[in-house]
Amino acid sequence: MSAPRRNRLTPEERRMQLLATGVNFLADHTLDGLTMDELARRAGVSRALAFHYFESTQGMHRAVVTMARDAMVSATAPDHDLPPRERIDDTLLRFAGFVREHRGTFSSLVRGIASGDPTVRAVVDESRELNAAHLRDAFGELGVPVTRALTISLRAWVAFAEEVLVTTATDDRADDSAIVELLSRTLDGAVEAARDSTL
Amino acid sequence: MSAPRRNRLTPEERRMQLLATGVNFLADHTLDGLTMDELARRAGVSRALAFHYFESTQGMHRAVVTMARDAMVSATAPDHDLPPRERIDDTLLRFAGFVREHRGTFSSLVRGIASGDPTVRAVVDESRELNAAHLRDAFGELGVPVTRALTISLRAWVAFAEEVLVTTATDDRADDSAIVELLSRTLDGAVEAARDSTL
Image 1 (cartoon, rainbow over the protein chains, first blue to last red):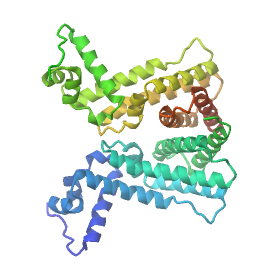
Image 2 (image 1 turned 60 degrees about the horizontal axis):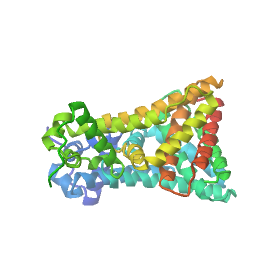
Image 3 (image 1 turned 90 degrees about the vertical axis):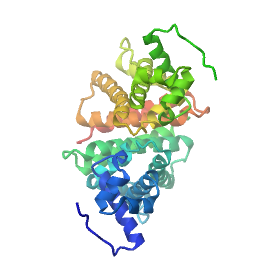
């Protein structure tokens, strides 16, 4: 089993290569299957070298999940050149596209929040928080009062959207515009319900 | 550290005592902190005896989570003497009450799906599935077409509801009727959106 040698990588390139290998692994597996041995084998490096870069399996998991999350966050960042309503719809459409293209990784992120490690879960939680905050900003610009009920409802709606996206991503019958339509309608519903809520 | 002796319990009673101890543990902790040693210590039995009942930590986790889930499922079972609309609202209200009373356990179940063990996650997933199925039945009785879009939307709405309940359970400002109002409105919104969906 002679592994390919890539000795000319700089430390930073090597680290990125290991992280990319880990993120690719998530496309077909959950995080708990990603041992340091498995990562080293897939990247064609020694176990000792993998440990050199991440120190512990927990640290490696955190770094891999952070990279996967950051890829998602940057692919779905709101376009602030658009007015708020268009910005929301544009973001939803890019989200659906991203999930379709990276369904395994997204599913590992959402379902695989199933890490026993709270710091790994926190990494994924941050992206939920961020999505909810972007929505709050956009609806605030549209004149919706930014209340506690709105904050609760938007964060819960992000969980709704994740569930819809995970379910439909593996289903070739679903087209992105139908997904976005369902998401957009329920999002408006969640905002309307929050607006009238005494919560 | 002399533990109380309860030698007169039958094997079935002992098993229930151990399970109840485990469920109580979840009220303040996540599942990953529940080692066999911790369970034995809290129940005042030997580690060997605890292993006798559950064989492995994984088996014990599965049994404890199953018991916590079943308690929730039976406390929030739909009352089929009520017509569908009233049945839904009644279930939501009992759900909010259950979560307020057992907030720690509920939060451990929902957030603590954060078990690395897929079979433990599956136990919790089943209760989501069951809640979504009850809703599908009730809306079906109300004449809503039971489509794939409805199934997807209801299951996602259960994730929405869990998030709202986890967030508000730890918040003394929220009263149950306001929570139920928000849940009921967004549920109707999810059903309406599904009805018009081409998904």
